[in-house]
Length: 244
Image (cartoon, rainbow, N blue to C red; front, top):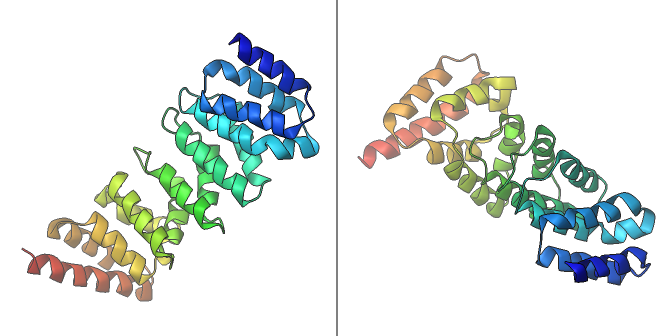
């Protein structure tokens, strides 16, 4: 620890970005809770071009320490701030850090909102990283379900496959799926292929599927959307009956 303190004092006084980044990387490779006090200096006392050149490693170290212990909300807010003002490479690092942090901490609503934004990012690795975070949830966060449905419509097979992994892994009770689709007209988001993926993943029995079909049939949904769901449900029913 004494050697690390000496290294911190040297990095603290340095104007060499490579030297500062090397120090931060060393912290991340051997993370300890005590290292947060070193990060606090670089987070609070650096700015401008210097801050821009070290922030990706600040994110990296926060993720590694957050993988060991719960982080206070001010660190989570710093990740949000960095995500919102950074390029795609840093945004990806932020989401990967949140993935590590989520294993030790319950993510607050602001971070969950950030994940919702990340699902709509224009950079594929950011989207996939956000879906990876969802795999750590014990309950699917309803506040970002609309964005998740948007992503399920993707033409990128890698995204759709990952969405299916999320649906298979994260509890989303079949009886609540209708209510979630019905809320704010979320049912209008899913295209036929996405409807098919949702049904194949979450409905394994004829009983649950028939109950779901009845709710949709009796709903006040716009007819064109209702027909899309009923068509996909009827196709799955035939498959399930055939496989009995």
